[in-house]
Image (cartoon, rainbow, N blue to C red; front, top):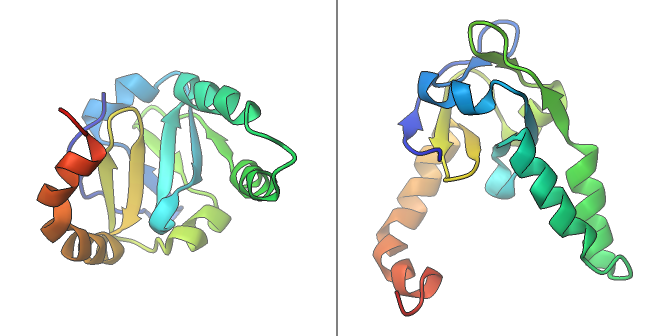
Length: 142
């Protein structure tokens, strides 16, 4: 399980140091994809494979499904952390998420999200007020 908020920086070679507590879960490989709200999603390889299997069950005759699958899989980057726990973020994914130097890495249970620090601050400012109200909507009858 991934949780918490971390604030690493991209180095001059566009590498990001993964938080130490995330490294063991990602040591066998990871996949980076575009995420919602213009963040990047880091998946443990097994979790990505599971998600991919579920996508295969979607109706390929639906144009929205095809558009999502095309965009999603064309952006995938397969990575292996180095001995220092760094991963390289490809230029297209950095551009998509607006990543320059200051980043925020958040744990979201089975995945990690990488955000531009200012974009994350804006997202929190816009969504945190409604967080309490979402509890009943996201987890009904809980």
